[in-house]
Amino acid sequence: MIKKIILLMGPPGSGKGTQGKILAENLMLPHVSTGDIFRKMTKSDTEESRLLSEYMVSGRLVPSDLVNKIVRKFLLSGDYKDGCILDGYPRNLRQAEYFIENIDTEISSVFFDVTDEIIIKRINGRYNCQSCGAIYNKYFDNPKTDGICDHCGSSELTARSDDDEKTVIARIEEYKKETLPLVEYYKRKGRFFTVNAEASKEEVIKEIALIAKRI
Ligand code: AMP
Image (cartoon, rainbow, N blue to C red):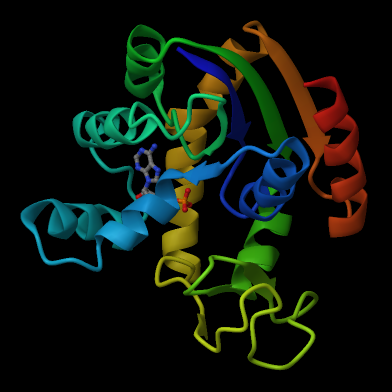
């Protein structure tokens, strides 16, 4: 059994990644993002990684059988016995059912509530550190030294290939159709917290710190 898993729910660009890393530090639990795992996997040259890329570049969800297999292997590897912050999974009903049936754990959920307009603005300026995954924004959240990651010192800072406007719109549509219905389900299961993800990064950090005390 895994002690506890905190699910991060919300549309792309709602701040799950940034705030998830902060929550993970607060609770001293690892931050597990399926998007990050898949992006790493796409760097190798296998049939599986080609399939992942094919879906990711177009903003569509990767088929659930493959996602479930990868997540199960990852979570049951033994490294996550004390729990984790799970970002980006489950993303549809099929994954949620698989999760309940295969992963024995206590669940809390944090929902990042934000409108489409804000999402598009945020994603538009977003870029990442390729080495540690830290997230920046060219309009309002650059590293202290231009082009150098604050967290690990790497100079490999680039935008995600699926952060262009057309793909973002496809990702938001997938989210509304497939993932949003799960939010209603998790509201009734375990502890559920809603964050006003339209507030400034600093305000959301404060809200996350309060939630961390209640989890
Ligand atoms: P993210 O970094 O969470 O925005 O995920 C980036 C992309 O990875 C998504 O647009 C999907 O193509 C894929 N992905 C990540 N997590 C999942 C999942 N649980 N189910 C299906 N596809 C996923």
